[in-house]
Length: 168
Image (tube, rainbow, N blue to C red; front, side, top):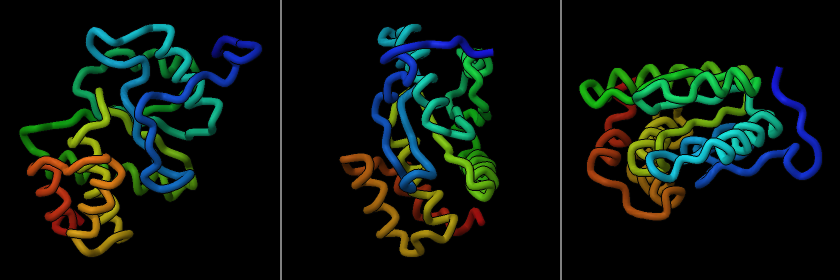
């Protein structure tokens, strides 16, 4: 059973770089608590509380290591671990997209996190919106992903978006 908190801490804090991909349905964020030397246990707990208290039905982690996944269980947050695979990006993306489609089909709010909100996760989200048929035109999907990212995506992210329709 998750710990009961009172006062301003009961709602937690918004995860860093939280961004809606599909308003009130699909979002991305940095790994709760941060990563590397910036990781803070207390911040991780507060961000997981925020995810739970804001009604996310599932958290999807794309980081390669299973670090801290047990914290989601302890805090009462449902999660899936779908580690990024640089060796076979297309199979990884197909699996992720099918999981997201299933979760979103259940009318569940979903949050996806990587270590950081960078080109990998934003390219994957741009590819997902194209794969799901929400944006058919590849250049438009790239523009949407880049606007959400706040910068031009790297060639690997753009390439994934360009071939997303082939992954259906």
